[in-house]
Length: 220
Image 1 (cartoon, rainbow, N blue to C red):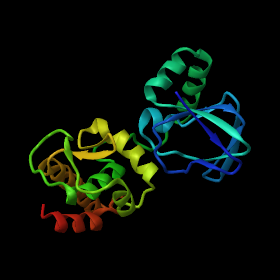
Image 2 (cartoon, one colour; image 1 turned 60 degrees about the horizontal axis):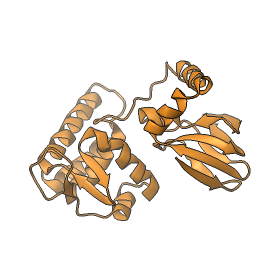
Image 3 (cartoon, one colour; image 1 turned 90 degrees about the horizontal axis):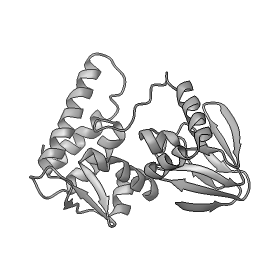
Image 4 (cartoon, one colour; image 1 turned 180 degrees about the vertical axis):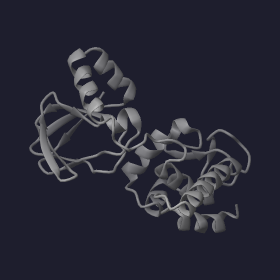
C-alpha cells in the first residue's frame, strides 16, 4: 500500500474528479468542501470510496488542514482493509446507504467521462480492426490531457478506471486502444442516444457539438 504526505492547504481531491483510491488518514486531518457543506476528518477516518469502488466523481474537494499522511489503497487493497476491519466496513455501509438516492452513476462505456476519453483518443488510432486495447495510440499522455482538459494525474486515473471497459487502457506508460472501428461504433452509439435525448428535451446533450467535430476529424 502507498502512503503520501500532504502539507497544510495541499489538495488531495477536487470535487468532480474520479480517483481510483480509498484514502485512510494515518496522521493529521483534512477538510471536505462541496455543495455548500464542509466538514473535517481526522486520524483513522477514510474517504474516496465513491471513486475507488464505483468509478464515481468525488462529491467534495479535500484539502489537508495540517501536515497529513494518507494511505492510498486501490480497490483490491481496500477490500482487504474492510475485510479485516468490520468497524470500518460498517461505517462504509452507513455512508453508502445514506447516498442511495443520489443520481451519480458509476463509470460505464457511455459515461460522459469515458466518451470524452474515447473522443480524444479516436483521431490518433491508426489500426481499424481489433476488439482489445492493444494498439498504441499516436499521442502522448501530456498532449491528450491538455486536449481533453484534464490534469495528467486525472487522465491517468480515468485511464485506469476505464481499462475494464475494454476500449482504452494505460500500460507501462503507453496509451493503448482497440481498433478504430470498435471505438467509432461506441462513439456513434453515444452520439445517437444524446441526439435522441435532445429531441425529447432531456438533459445531458452538451457533448453533441463536440462529437460532431470529432466525427468530421475521424470521418466516421
